[in-house]
Amino acid sequence: MPAQPSLPDVIAALDALWPRERAEQWDAVGAVCGDVANPEARVTRVLFAVDPVQEIADEAVRLGAELLVTHHPLYLRGTTTVAADTFKGRVVHTLVKNGVALLAAHTNADTADPGVSDALAGALGVRVVGPLVPDTTDPAGRRGLGRICELDRPLPLAEFAELAAARLPVTAQGIRAAGDRDRLIRTVAVCGGSGDGLFDAVRAAGVDAYLTADLRHHPASEAREHSPLALVDAAHFATEWPWCEQAAAQLDALADRKGWDLRTYVSRTVTDPWTAHAASVASPTSPASSTSPVHDHTPGAPN
Ligand SMILES: [Zn+2]
Image 1: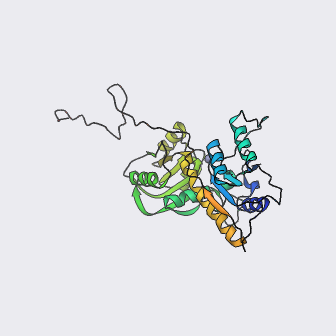
Image 2: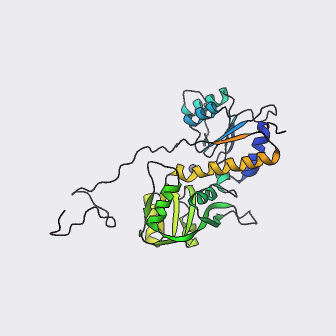
Image 3: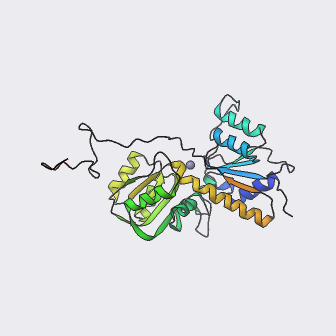
């Protein structure tokens, strides 16, 4: 007969999936709040989400979850207050008052096998070949940051960008792409979250395209000048949300094996901070893109 697991047992199982010691030095992963050492504390429902924001804390309470697992940490730097008049303190109060523990799995989930970028590759339907930046402590060579992937059949960049737009969560940004729209994409490096620090590895991998989030002007511009590498930029949230489904499935499988009476939930709330998008409109005074003309000014042609 399945039994409700204790909070320490569930957290230990999740820590085994994403060992805390594999997080980056600057990161703050693990339990943020909750009675995590109490063997009497039971878990019946676990909610997975990207961001530990108030909307998600409220969702966990409405659901009756005893554990909220987020990818992003609530606190990354030292703090001197958890008072409820700060937005993070209010999140802590909401969770503690309602008996919800919070666990963050951030860069330890990025480098895991499977990790955040495996989930991203899975959402895109591309086949993972190996890590983009391998973790040198993994003899199997499967852990690490980002993933190098192959497409089942080559797609022009424009179609690959449309595929990403269709497969990833809907956000205001949508998908931006850089490069020749007809360039055939056979191989792609993917990295969930902000990936513009990995351009050296992407170039070394010799892939046709790089899909990540938060690409800034200078790194993107320099990468384009260096090589014909195509860039596909999605919203940060959109590249990491698929991990929530992967993580929930991992906990489901664990619960089955251990005979735990436990339900997992994935938040469908979009917590991307950007909420609106206006497409550029050409005007006589503004510079216009040379690659996507809005109007063809052929002399003598009708409008
Ligand atoms: Zn992130």
